[in-house]
Image (cartoon, rainbow, N blue to C red):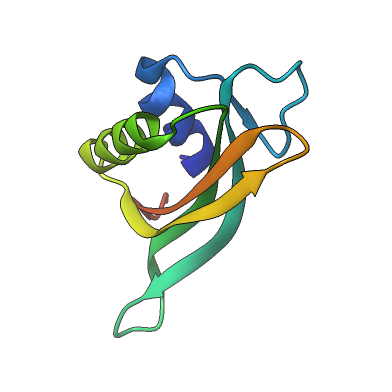
Length: 113
């Protein structure tokens, strides 16, 4: 179970190119870069981890209006049982002409035996 793979699967229906870490191909008019943020354990009364919490940041880059894509990403992630921990407009990159919007997500996984 991997938050990165689950993000790829969930967002594939949107048709926006997605890569992990860095976008290596020629950049299209819109794309997503996913970066892992943290892996933590949720502890229980016996101090043994019971839940693996994996977090990642999705950076949406769009030339033009980003609002419809942002809303579609958020709706799709919530529908796929992701927890959205933060959303924010990062800024307009004058060198590239892209708006940059970030969505941080977390997904809880049962511990594998």
